Length: 80
Image (tube, rainbow, N blue to C red; front, side, top):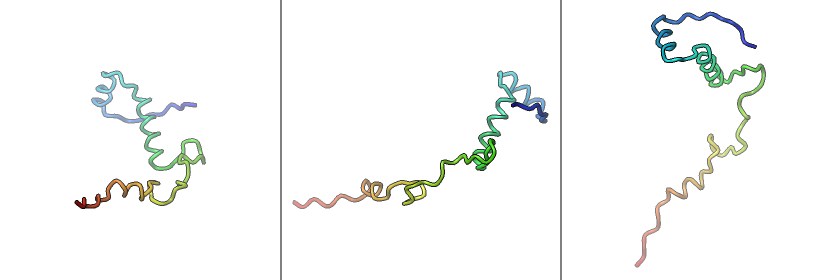
């Protein structure tokens, strides 16, 4: 359900947005949703936006350190 609200926007900014055909209401709604996701706030109530903790807890990103280090290791010297 959508609700009518009022926001104040500088007239020149609003005119510029309308001149390029921007749907200001839809843009503001999209940006608000993006902001709320970054704040870990659910617009649906108590639904968690994050899928939960990573099951691979070796690193914060879940990257396997051994395979990353393998590509960066020095090659052994050539014995002739």
